[in-house]
Image (cartoon, rainbow over all chains, first blue to last red; front, top):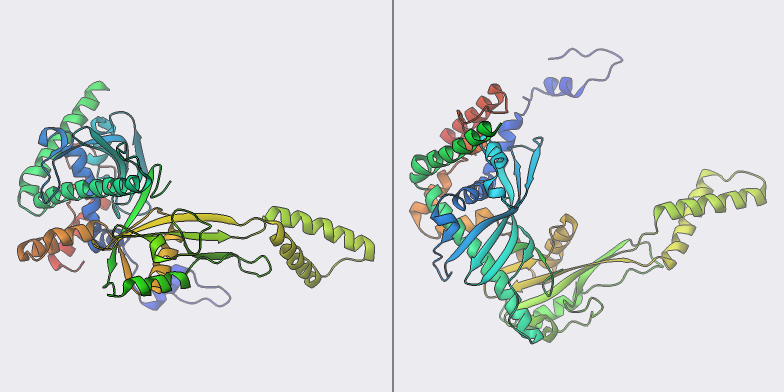
Length: 209
Length: 236
């Protein structure tokens, strides 16, 4: 216990030491927060999406199911990456081919995961654009396909239906991710394949340098 | 920007609880009870928040016919803030203080200055227009989902409070946890797999051997040990 000196106020560290409490490990706190309510599933899903839209499923083809028709997903022009913990820096990648960016892959290989991702979803001739956040799957900068209706009330119905379709497509992709994530395939195939995908990009990056 | 037009910013909620059978009558009453009331310039209130029509922020006469549409409750949350600009108030106070001190030939006391500031703030409130913020909400009653067209913390907090007061129902953010729970459903295997799932080491500490890991070895090892330890204990 720290000795109390007369005339001097105890520092916070001394007060904590005197109280007998142990200091909290910030890594443990960050990890506990990440696991709370399955939050890590959000960031792992978006990171997996970046990989899947590039490498597998013929570049982001999803079969749909459960009332959701098949669709294709591509990565848009912006991705935000961050490591675990509040004190860590954030990297924002912008450009026409974020999904193919070696810098983004280099960051993922270093333990950063996607926290926000621009995605484009296509079905038939219709295109949805949105930025998805990992924490709550919040959506922003959502652009819906052109409306076909002309009446105001029909326009509102169609707009709500198109928003519903966007959410349903994301949910469908998340279900595919969960199938993979909760099976042995995740550690035996997906993560090794992602490692190889990242290794190739990092190699290309160092060759270019 | 909102439910009706333009680009969309959206947070989705799951509505918790059961809608009463006579919901039309009870919801109309409770929505009317929580309708937006403008901030009075005569009062000291800075903010006011309440419901208004999704189609017109000045339409505060809300009947079911106006806010129910094809299985959806359509409303907007309106928040007015009436706060005189601080810099303007400060300038005005300084000018008036100089004027009074010159007339009286002595300095104003701190208490007198405080009173003068309150009087000036009251005067300014009468000429300052309120800042209005309107955020749409669309509640799909059948699906039990609510879309709120803002991510702003203050507006989302206002929604959570007002929604539970008005409808006596709760709201939960619809995030990865909710989707995972819905995916698992009653399937025991899926439920237990999800329960056992922990963050992937590589997506936490980096892919060893692919590139140098930016965290020091010590920090990386610390995260790994936390992960392994807590996975084994199942304490998190």
